[in-house]
Length: 313
Image (cartoon, rainbow, N blue to C red):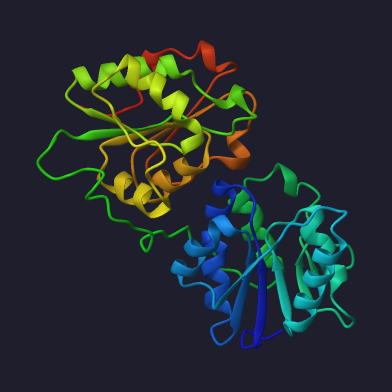
């Protein structure tokens, strides 16, 4: 298929970090198909961010219907068939997204992914052992797109004037991202350890700034109880504001969680903490100043070891 094909579909949702690691491939697909109309099939949390990126002409929401919800599956099938897509880039490469290949009437569109019988399979049996960035670059190369840039989030920004009012506290600050998946507590460095780190930073002349989703309010409240001078922004930051905060921060420390991918991608000096529950070789944030720490159990990681990764005066 030529780069001028009229209708292109990209499929991507998943976790925030995984979505952000696809920003380079998104840009590569846009550059390769300059004259095409490119549609992204994603989920609601990423719709606004995807639209702001400039890589897509349309954003469609994937309902991710349960198996029993036949009407929703039929509606999605009708929509996909009506799109007139000449090529599909399945960057999700899950069993669900691969199943969408069969939703198209024959002749099916050209398909980059792992769906059985597709025209441009990512034919590497070790693909699951690759970091997301290298895996997607190889997938696109097998589909004819050889140049995939690093993720560029210069367009992602937000107003932080109400979060950090000018003149109220002019100390340099360090972001602490202490949350993560609620069902994966083994991936979280303990709140008491973040509290001790926050106290250390405060005494050194830095303001600890805590960010996290509303569901993480108990974790951030515990950190604040150890360090009352920390600024708790729990539930108050969107993706753009996290990017803006990270650009101005002296450094950041956080768990293996989605916001740290934003922090790392905008160039902040970021220390990302991994337990044995996840593999940084496959999913670590990428950025110019990323430092990775991994320990078998989060409870065994000393605060001094984390503090030593921060190149602060």
